Length: 162
Image (cartoon, rainbow, N blue to C red; front, top):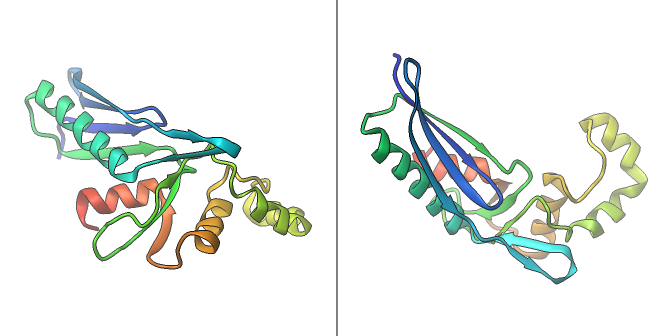
């Protein structure tokens, strides 16, 4: 099946969406702002419902401009932004901790003796930038309920029910 594709990029300050046709290129575009909260101590978070609403709004704007149905959706996002959510309902259980958030520094300090081994296993340095320390911080400090994932998994669930 060929035809236009809706490409969505959910970023730190907003969501961009394009409808791209294989024959004619970009035939629709949309944008919706996202407002992360920068709190003291290096904390940066965003309301997950605002992320979801921005994806829907940017996508609707692009589809309205394109005036054609699409055959597929592609999603790119802030890969290291995480949240806890209820897999039965899709309801967020926490705010989303943005990739810039530093609150998981304590987790990294606890794991420092294993930093070399963790780098060997994952290919990543031990740093609160990455999703895993933030996921552990959420489990230890906010909730043991639901699942903790990056925002792409949550957005796919909310958009498709999968």
